[in-house]
Image (cartoon, rainbow over all chains, first blue to last red; front, side, top):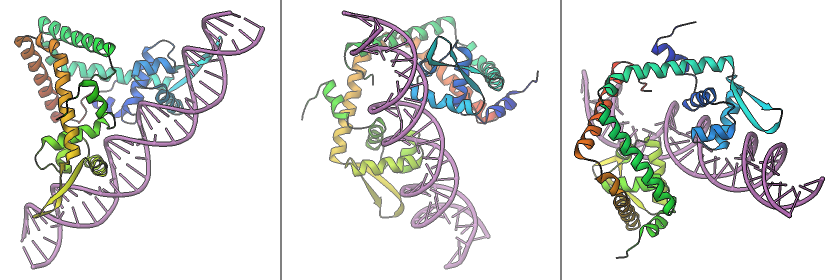
Length: 138
Length: 138
DNA sequence: CCCATTTTATTTCCCTGTCAACAAAAAGTT
DNA sequence: AACTTTTTGTTGACAGGGAAATAAAATGGG
């Protein structure tokens, strides 16, 4: 086990695009993710995911596999190298959370609740408006 | 003066990309905007603005002009056609505000203040962190 | 079982915006 | 004034991602 500090971790992710890291993250977190699942979880088109996974396979960070009872869907898993990136990203995420903790700690429960309530409210409102008529939101 | 309802306004903006409308909006709001000013206000590179304005000129929505005492900077203004788009967008914006008013009215002053305070706090924190060391935020 | 429909993944084409190189003008320095 | 540096705008190469067309497999209905 090798321990890296924050800048070392950042350095080791330097060679990868945010979208690639996000894709690795999503593959690591989901169970049996396929193109469609990844597209939904990353809010991208299947076409984009198809290209992204292809690139990640070429880089040796992920690999694809199929089920014996399904010749259509293609699933992905992390390679050992991919798992390293996944871990580094996860640790880096924690480090940033730790760094920013002070700000979030100052927020009281009441304040947090009211913010959450507002966001949920607005979200519900927009969903309703979208359903009501067109597709535009703003 | 012609009055349009919301869907009619949306329809009349259909032929323009969001970036184009935003650019028109920014040109309409700023005084003597040049490429650099627009780039800053729209958080885009000068290259992107240069191409965008070129396209808007071809479409006849804006026109460029120079100052007699400055042969370098190029300013933009809306044409009559551009002003129409500007107005429609502005009205549409108001319409959406009106539509969503109910949600925002439910937020009390205290709640609003606490949200604002949090955001300012976080923003200041991130600025400080960026200054402190690298350029990364997350 | 067979055909129509749906789901899934891939590919091609296209558009948008960034980056880096460049040219021209302005500003600063000596 | 003559130079260097900075600012400003433009261009071309490039990459990322969306839309639509396509192919292949799965599902559903008769």
